[in-house]
Image 1 (cartoon, helix red, strand yellow):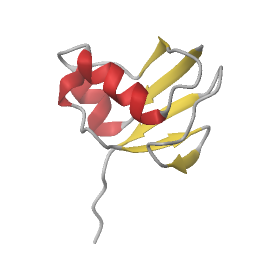
Image 2 (tube, one colour; image 1 turned 90 degrees about the vertical axis):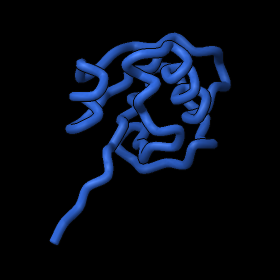
Image 3 (tube, helix red, strand yellow; image 1 turned 120 degrees about the vertical axis):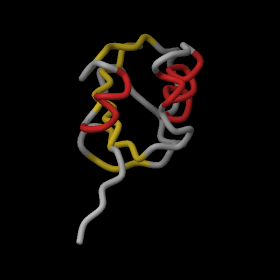
Length: 81
């Protein structure tokens, strides 16, 4: 299945792109997608093992199962004051 991955703010700077498409096996989870990217090596290995992620604009847990055409957004931590 195909999913669209988007990187925001500091993650976009780390990986050097704002989006890409992944082809994953059916039944893959968010954790599987993160692991797949990190195994690709630089620059993706610099992504955290458990980043904050939204699927289709909804925060989800790493165990969330992905579906064909989902949009997976990597959301970096933010600080405020």
